[in-house]
Length: 561
Image 1 (spheres, helix red, strand yellow):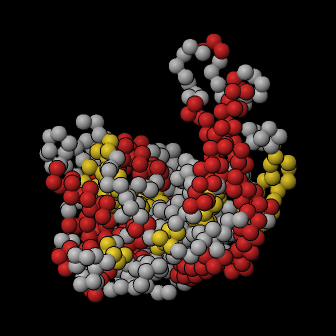
Image 2 (image 1 turned 90 degrees about the vertical axis):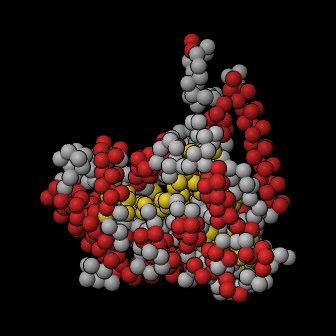
Image 3 (image 1 turned 30 degrees about the vertical axis):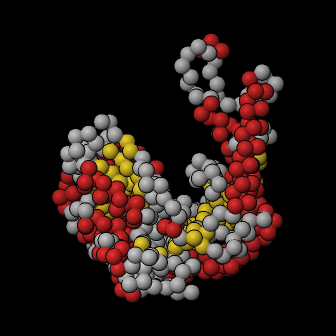
């Protein structure tokens, strides 16, 4: 069922211009209101008319967790916790062998070094299913991978390699969105040529003698690709966020952060010393309330105006598979004169008709985003990150960013990998390969999501997102799903608490343009079989939009005041 822009699959399609008289539109979802015209008059223009902000359908749903499943999940964690305390008791009296790190006997009166109680979850719950993570691969992380087989004889406290290799495992977990992670083709050939000429390492920072002509070429290309005045590149995606945000805001500034932002954004915000307030995920009412309060009340105690207000959002949220409601965020940003920091780590290359990310996906002007951040680790098959924006911004970061001043420059072969893949996406290599990869990824995403939903699984996120979370819920099913899929030669990523809410454990699939239809059909067949085996088909086909969930208006605040 097709919906209007801003609509949802579980509600009738509505045009924004038609709904002022019948009800109010909030974030694309219609709520019938008793106070019609009067209530609508109290809404800001971009909320009552938000349907007009979207140039394409925006279909995103989060099916409600079945009550019985939620209860059984809590019971499962409760049982595991009780057994954990029992095993800790046995370890304390040396009845059970203790494998985890502990203080030496002569240091028992010292301040705890290993924080034993805080590691309770790790040693008693995580260890039971630890074999599902850190699996070593011994091939290119393409559509298929080879995995080194390992065994544990002490319940996952340690592993031993058997010497065998599990061949041709279908890789459903890597962020290889456009399929550029390969050891053949034009990218590999160009990188190999640069390796011969420049070597591997630079052994210096950009500000000293580590600034190569290749770095300059890459930054000009990134700026052209993004449609901004200038860009700067960094050697690590995580540090691009965590080290640049403190250069942009400080004490006396306000950061408004989405509650599901990546750890790098969270760390950067905390290191900045600015006050942090968190808004509900993709909830424009929650964000607008914080913006209004910030303008009206100013800083705590002094009531002085904030020096800056910076909104932090991501293009694609890597655990939810959701896409930021960027048109509405930009409308709010303009209305309240705030700055916008957009992290496109997962969306650059993977979204939009030309692969230019979420800005391209919505058909927006790049100039409306003050700071455009992204990484080269996913769609480009390389490493590092970038910041794009006004020339004044980039010139400022060159002298104030810790990543720019202290970090070693990007490796020349890595730079060439990025340049070659980006030119391919832009069509500057004289072929249509990049465009075909973008189209293939979009087709794979829609096909895979549709098939999983038809099978009866609960799937989170936007219908165009290449990140596809399949809900597992119960702790025992996290390990069981990962192991059963590997038995069937399918490599998947499973995620549980504390990386997700305690009752929302999931498997996270990442689609790639390198996946053929035959690969996806094979994976879907095995997922269907494992879903029946583990009773994972919870869907009642009753999607609940995330924004229809009630939200707590209280906010989390960090301040040194």
